[in-house]
Structures are given as C-alpha cells and as structure tokens.
Amino acid sequence: MRAPYQVLVFPYTIKDNLIEFAIFKRSDLDYWQGIAGGGEDEEIPIESAKRELFEETGILGSVSFIQLDSISSLSVENVVGEFLWGDDVYVIKEYCFGAQVFSKDIILSKEHLSYKWLSFEEAVKHLKWDSNKTALWELNKRILKEIS
Image: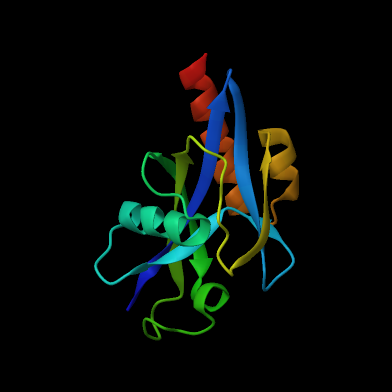
C-alpha cells in the first residue's frame, strides 16, 4: 500500500571539486525533476529514497545519502489523483535527499525519457517545481560547504 508521503532524490557526483546533479525528464509529462516517488507499506522516507533511486536509475551499492531539511507539502490530488488516504488527508509531505553516486551510468525506468548531468546553475534552470529548486539549492550549498 502507498504510504502518505513522497520522496525526492537528487543523485550527484563530485570530481575535482566539480559537482554535477542528475535531473530527469518525465515520460508522461513534459518537465524535468529529481527522482520522485511514494513510500510503500511501512517504509521510512530514507528507505523509500533508496528504493526509488534504484527503481528509476538502476543505481545500487555505493551511494551516500544526505537527508535535507527541505520538506514540502503536496496536494494529494496532484500526487495520486485522489483522496487515497481518506477525506481528511489533503496534503502529504515530500522528504528530500541527495545521493552521492560514484558512477554516472544510469539505466532509466519507463518513468523517464532522458536524464542530464548538470551543474547546479544549469540544473535549476530546467526544473519545473519550486520544491525541486529549493531542495537542489540546499543540497548544493551543503556540498559546497563540505568540500571547501
């Protein structure tokens, strides 16, 4: 059963202090975003983030996750199309993560048409949702602080 929350994950790489983020173009709608999906059953958000990353990119193994402070509220109708969790649940939380990966090799699921590895400045220009832009900004700032 779908849990009443969403996760958002931005894979990233660091090489010679250059940071690149992966963004993904959805196959059903014409926009770019991070990896997004819902929790399942009794998963906690970090478990959902790991599963979604694997399902949508094929990335498994050596990945270092950062849970971000960015949390958004999303309407249930925009996420699942209906009041799935009852008439009193109007919004769900979207928990955001960064995922440092050590290979840019991605095997896309059917949810996405393509992906790009971009700098923060280029990636944020492509993103549709403000929640994605805020999460990516926070992740970029955290990484810059860590590597400086």
